[in-house]
Image 1 (tube, rainbow, N blue to C red):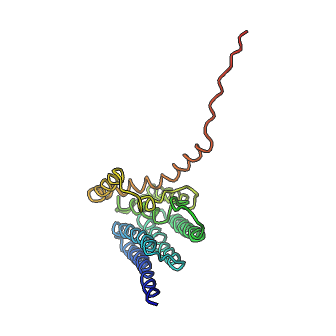
Image 2: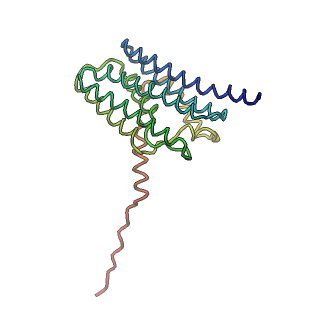
Image 3: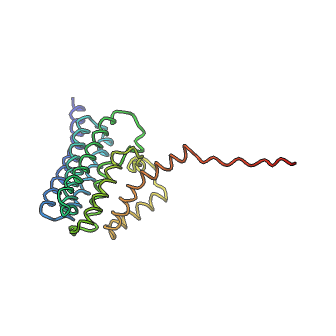
Length: 251
């Protein structure tokens, strides 16, 4: 009986991280309505950190559950789907008029579809080294990094059009089958070598001293990594055939 109580107590911890993720997403929505776009973007990034921690804690304590998966997805739908789409609408596309509503809804729809697909496939065994399609938190972090880089609201239709195009591209990445590396799985449980240590050191330096630039560049490279890996796999499956040497027959 004591063991069951202890396991139940541990099982609550990942859910607390999911609810914390939900809280930061909710606060981001409120700040967006008050026009504090940079802080709203930063809270989306903080919510993503909480989202990463709930999975790590669940695996570390051996307490993953169907309830936890569903709660995590519901929190993600609010923190990264709804909060991000509202932020993009009020910050960058409100000047575009009615079409802005459509493009904001596209981002939310793509995020919800991506979460639904993840839930369906969560029971299928996998190596967990790659995700299929850009994860919703990664998409939200990238868009929040864009807002954090330029928090002043966009005031022209041309800039709103660029944001709409960016939303379409990110939404396609979310619902695509592009392979995206699970960096948490790569680093957890691996020996720390000099390359890993250097990467961590550079990342910490970038976050502390060049936060805006580092977040934008790092998250942007993460978005591009999926299509790049898909191209690499395509070329490996269909390598170029070397031209056969011509045989010269002497006359």
